[in-house]
Structures are given as structure tokens and as C-alpha cells.
Length: 412
Image (tube, rainbow, N blue to C red):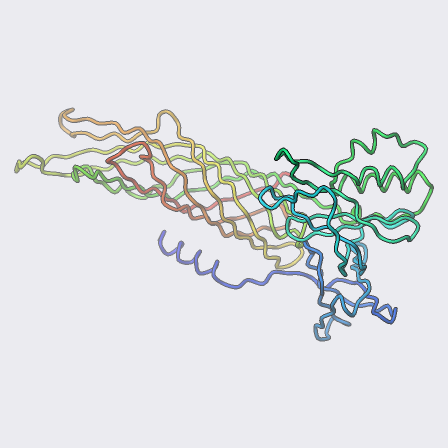
């Protein structure tokens, strides 16, 4: 049964599931300054796009627009991108590729900039992988990059060009702003958005905060309980009479899961951490003939294993509708055993040759497939790969794995 469930899990994971990304009400402005209302395929871009897909009506064919033909596009009440030719410094912050020049190295590029704040002072962002750059304009002036750059100094230390603070202090004045406000401003989206909001409010100017429109619930805490169907086999590379395969056993598990939703791609990606308690207990009697004796002996093996598992992994959601979604996840599992976890074995009649093996485990991987309803209730099937319980023993090997059914309830 366990192998059949595992085969079903792998089969389902190999299916190209449909991932719901909606066509949402939006618009674009073409090179002739014509505004076209349409339905835009909103994939909640992490990296600034150079093209997008749209439909003129629900039933019309999907079309594609590019940065060459569109000056601006947006999804109503969610996001806005506008095309600009800007001077951008793409110097890397990676220590292995860091520049030894303090000043920015600028090139002209035509980009779709994401509009974060639109008002008397506007804030824009550009992201491409690990590269993040912020731009600003005041009173519809030329859009300029806020300069932040790490560089290598002559004594092989890391210096930081934080000219963006001077730019903001010089250009965005407010009677209530003190120098310390700018000095404490990090080159991060939340900090910069808050600064531009305060500047526009201070000058009694109307503005649009697109980040406020996109606020999302980015953290979930769930309680999770379930059943493990676990198997264990052990082997001694010196004495094969000590080899034994225990029966599959059912055991309960209980844990708490923290899920951190990634703020892009329509909330489809998440990082998860799930400390959980699990246990396995089993007894097996094996009949052996030892030391060339014709007399069989019964050896009783007892496995008593409990631990705290700590899976850390990545989850991906496939949306079915507004209330239902399927998810898959993969985790690297750290395992912390209890002091009483061990395997005992010895002669069933006398106490000859009793042995105790302390369980000290290695780490392993786990893969799950699940369903979540109404962002509250979840059901997951999870397969955990082989885990070595004799990590500190030279001549002992073991294979411990489990298939779990896990029920979850999201608290918030």
C-alpha cells in the first residue's frame, strides 16, 4: 500500500498542473498615446517585464505587447509600469564581482519602471534577479537613479557609496525633516516608500501609493497533525545475523508550520519551516544460527525512536479557484533525536550478547503534495526519503523512511 501511495504521489507531481494566473482589468497606452482598456495577464512580476499578455475581452484571443509598442500599462488598483529611457548603474554587489570604482557606471537603457509612489515626488523601482535599483522624479522632471553602490577600496575593504541620501536631502525638502531622517534611511523599498509618502503629505500634495494597494498577508501560522507510516531496516557489515527489517508501523506526528509567502508571482511561492514531533516503535524477533551451532536462537530487536524534525523548504501553489489550491513542496529535514532513542537486541532466552545502539540521525529530504481550502484547511501527503539512524557508527547502516498524511489548520 505504501509503495502504491508513493507511486501515486510521484505521478501526480509529474503532471503539468494548471496554475491560475488571472487576466485582470487593466489598460495600456500605445506609442500613439491611445489608452486601451483590456484584460492583462497579471503574473505579479518579480523582475521588471519587457512584455506582457493581454485580451481585449474575456473570449478574445491572447495577444502580446512589448516595451517597443507600449509606453505604459497597469492592472487597476494593483500595479503600474511606465516606459522610460534612464541612466542606470548595474554594478554588482557580489563580493566576487564588485567594482573598485566608487562612482556609478551608467548606461542608457529603455525600461519598464514599476511605479511605487506617484505624486509631486514619484518613486520607481527596477529589479532583475539580485539587482535592485530605485529611481525618483520631482514635479515631472527627468527620472534619476537613487545612487547606492558597494565597491572595493584600495586597502581591499568594502566601501559604500550612499549618495542617494544626499540626493533626497537636496531635492525633497520638508520643514519637519531633519538630517537624521535621511541619514537613517536604508536603500530598501519600504524605507523609501515611507519617505516619499511623508514628503508628499508634508507638501499637501495628492499622491498614489501603489504599494499600499498591494499589501498582502505574507505570513501564515498553522498547526499540523497527522499519521506516519514508517519503515526501518538495519544492517551490520560485519555480522549479518544482526540484520533485520522491522514491520511498517503507524505513528502520530504533531507540528507547527510557519509559511513565509514570497511577495511576487501572485503569492504562488513560499518558504516554510515546520518543527514537528514524530516517533517510531517496533519489535521484531529473528531466528538465527550462530557460531556453527545447529541450535537456532531467537534474537529480539526493539526499536524506540522519537525526534523533533525541522523541515525547511520551498512550496509552490497551483490555484484552482478563489477558495481552492493544490501545492507541492520540497524540504531539507534536520532531525534532532531524544536521549532515549535507541535500538536494543539480544537473545530471547538468556541475556547473552545484549546490545544497545544509540540513535543519532543524519538529515534527509521530504516531498509533499497537498490541497488547501479557503486558506484555512489543508491535507498533505508527504514522502520522506531514507534517513540514516546510525550516523555515528562505522559498521552499522539503516534505512528509515515514512509516508505521512498531514492535516493542517491555519491560525492566521
